[in-house]
Length: 344
Image 1 (cartoon, rainbow, N blue to C red):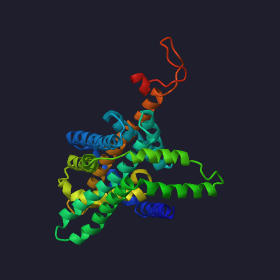
Image 2: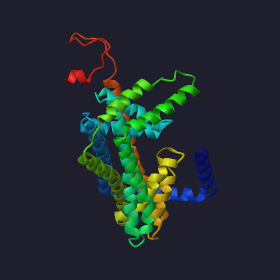
Image 3: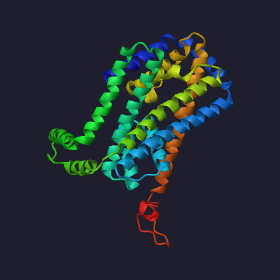
Image 4: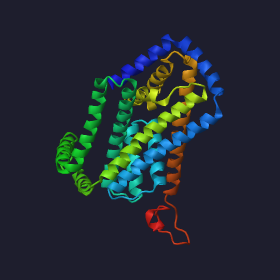
């Protein structure tokens, strides 16, 4: 909380002190953005969609590895919806996770498979971003292997943590049981409250035995998700005449996306944009207004498509699962329309 408050105070101070300059740059950026190449903007939009499809493939594969079944269309729809909820609601991480959990369960995926998928996709996504950053550092300075040590160790730690959970579910369950019982004691509830669901989920997780092909496919999809999003940013830069090889943005992009996790505002607005603008102007060949315009276009396309598609998916799902009155066709009273049993 104190970190986020400090970041908010720092952002407010920067805006207040540099307001005249920021106003001039923003006005010039809007003019530059209006002149962007429509062809490259269409390309950027397609790359943004492809990035979300890659994330959907990762989610679909992790669910299949846990014994569940999910179509790619539904996996992408859930990813869009969860992302939109995460970006726009208070407690976005909790709200988006709860929504994805309920929606996947309604699709007939077991609680264990959903838990496994949500956990592993988060770990693989973080590890994929680390690998993108490692690649950027390697390209920037091939001789400085020490600069790769920390991110490489972080990636190995994430992989080791995932492997430990898969190979030793009993030890993990015992730790969680102790935490739940202590929480129940603090909340003055029964010591075993919630443990039934926990044991059932753990039992499902013990049956998860992913193959090497599952790890490779899901990990590749996680990296592709980040790289396609980076190419979306690159296409927005090209639309304004910023000719910069995409691999020169790898390290800065990874740092910007990692900073979004500690940003006081949804989507890392302000922190992420500042890092990317600095990366675009570091060579001295791009003006600040053009760099801001490129980032603005990237944000409108990536975040805009996520919010529109995500909330559209939430609305469509709400309508589809809304209980309806029985009709002459023989619908069961109170049963949601379009449930898995109807499809069968």
